[in-house]
Image (cartoon, rainbow, N blue to C red):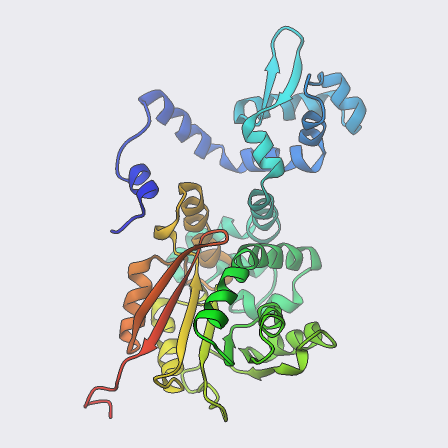
Length: 374
């Protein structure tokens, strides 16, 4: 397994003492309540209050400022001491914010992950075992009867939608600027298919960045309807069109283009499918590609992360796909994606790493047909 240096250092050698390992094991065993206590320390504003009080606050002062009972505050602060999000001055009994608490409060990625895990995943992960055994998102049932989360996305409760899109957009948006430079400055794309274009956010960025590009969004019909509503009246929207397509249906071909197709864009899209499904999607993309077309795949490949916490978040996110999204996909590594690309009759031309929050853009071109395929 190929790993970037920081991951190899962390994942190939034992780093903990026996005592540290024992504590880590208990931390895992109590993980659900660690999460909920920490979430409430944020929601109730306790960590905010401690951030604004460098000298610390007593339990009584925290009760007065939050309106929580002494009992509730005692439970939360004692648990948070053990978790490590706060510290206490043993002489004055004043609580102060720890470094971990600071990151929980201030790191944008952590806040997005916190909301996503509570609103979208928490209840569903109770059914992770069934999902792993059955290959179906058994945890999705408490939201609705859909086979995958994508069919039900437009029907989810608003706060769940907000957390889902907040998570999705946070990671992709941070990479968009650099990705736009690759597609339009390096490859001069003028006719682009946006596969799995969702709300049209990327398409709007494209038509704003390049005055020459036309973007066709390919997605489920209900997503195309949502996309059209979202882009209506916005700058450049006249250069965005939509095509409703079930990308899991092997009989649903990619639309042919009346103009030369320069690029096909798939951003945080292929991780929504199994490897077998990815090969099928890529093969259909190849059918409309010419020697001039480049396929741009933007993914957060967990083995290519510069910092280990990012790899941790990605491998955990895989279990969201297992229990909630579809039951059979994950956050892939370079080896997995390369296998799919090769099986689809494509080859990797270039990989651009470390965009935004840890994305890579894999640029692919079509291989000539073999004699048996012609």
